[in-house]
Each structure stands twice: as structure tokens, then as C-alpha cells.
Amino acid sequence: MRKYVCIAVLGILLSGSGLGCSITKATPFIAQEDARINIEVINHGFEDATLHAMWTGKRVRLGTVSGTRTATFMLPWAVPYALQIEIDLLASVACTTRPIVADPGDIILVEIRQDLRNCGYGF
Image (cartoon, rainbow, N blue to C red):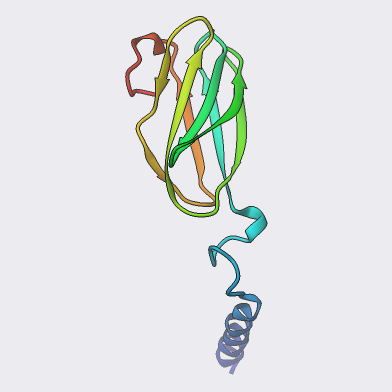
């Protein structure tokens, strides 16, 4: 008997969870105010790094990460796009990451290696 009560309660909860859905949202799995990506940056080098996000012809400055520090940046992001991060080290080289497809709600981790002067894709 107890087994059937648990199944009935679970059925009610699952059927009621769909009542709050709306067709007007861009993505059904994330609330519209949460349609963003978070970019976490760990700078292992000693130089300050300025970061820019680039997608579909747009280039947006995220901010600066001091040497041997970490930072988190939030970027409004409603639909999946290919994203690249440009890393410009203070008084040194600038590198661009490979493109990755970012979906709303993603957390993207960027690690800036200490030997970024070689400008490889190893970060």
C-alpha cells in the first residue's frame, strides 16, 4: 500500500512541474534572467591579462585578470554560439582560443599558462 502512495505522490509532483512552463522563453531549461554564461579565468602567469569575448562578429571586453589571480565574468547569452576568448597580456603577446560552442548556463574555465608567450592553444 505504501508503495502505491509514493508512486501517486511522485506522479502528482511530476505532472505539476510542467504547469509553470512558458512558450515565450528562448530556452525552456533556463529562466530568461539566467540566460548567460559564466567565464572563470585562472591566471597562472605574472602579467596582467585583458580578456575579450568574440562571437558572430562581436567583440566584448570582459575585463582584466591580475597576475597569479582568478576572476569570474558574466556574459548575457541567450542561444548557442561559437565563442572565442582573446587574451592580451600586458606589454606582451595576444592570443585567441579555439572556438567552442557555448550554451546558456554554461560555465567556461580559461586557464592562462605561465608560458603563454609561446601563444599555443594549451590554455
